[in-house]
Length: 464
Ligand code: ADP
Ligand code: ASP
Ligand code: MG
Image (cartoon, rainbow, N blue to C red):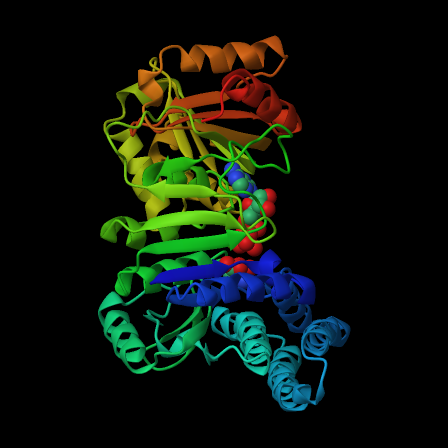
């Protein structure tokens, strides 16, 4: 059996949904056993977040946003089912949207939007898209069932980014699939607590849904169908010459997605890796192309540099002071203080003189991080051993990713001289101890040029 997951752009309108149904039909014609996971229509999750936030501000124009969401789904349904069979699903979609409207109206009246309510609001995206796809397939004679993943994936109560309870989920998935033999069209991204409250698995989480189900059912392969030809050497929207890779390891894929490559959501890799299930990234709009295979490392395959990813917006925190050298366990204290506040540190560098420690964080975390560090070092700051923490803004971070990066001689040199020759200053540089990435911080205004320059330098001569 295979799990096929179709992302937002693959189900973004009636035309692309027709392409998806064609791909599914081809599998069925070949008598391959599959189960299908789909995302919300592209843009819908963002639209749902925005409409909920607007309602929470007491802005009555939220109704206009709601109507746009409603129209998008009803139009798609009408385009897909053009005969009288549309009546029943139309009533169901309208009733579902009415339920969404009632929730938004309460948010508007109370002027309050909790993470719990936002998860409920977001869940309508996957719920509606999958229902519409399953109904369309049924009316075309393809036997299938719509499956709301809240029935089979159980999580904790961390709304917005819930953690899966594998013990319960494994039992539920095995039980469900042993009784339901028809093709399942499953909602990605959404899950529920043991008490049945809606949760979500983090943005981009439909990939993760596919991997959870695939690992528990021990499938032969997980296919992630998207709008590009696979994992590419860089984000094709930013680097013109980016090209698709034939194969990458789980670790490389994880590293690239950690550093901004949205093509796969990084938690997805873990369940597949644990069961050694291969993941293939495929293009819905170019289905005959082989795509990229994510697989365990095989000793006879040479893996070198695989790609360049970027996080476009970061802040650096500079902790500086002559006294820094003498403070025992300073890095550990800083890390602990940040961990307590649940702040993700993207990079850390410490000069050999020990006078300065630099940390990169997401902009939304920088003030909280500054406070946490200053609070931890308040005595040292008071005694003027350490200066107050400085925040440097308008920065980007790029990472060259590949197994054996360190075994490829001269990579850091090549990277730095290519940047230098093009007038791009490096603000900080770090090589991950995993030997999987070389990370560089530059000014945001230089990002696009830096990505293209480095791509030409490192990848122009080869197709890996
Ligand atoms: P889906 O809706 O199918 O989940 P996403 O938008 O989440 O698709 O991810 C696919 C997008 O990821 C591509 O359209 C591409 O712009 C972007 N992307 C960023 N980095 C890379 C990369 N290295 N390789 C491929 N795509 C990338
Ligand atoms: N619809 C969700 C999102 O936009 C999940 C996904 O598409 O993977 O984040
Ligand atoms: Mg995605």
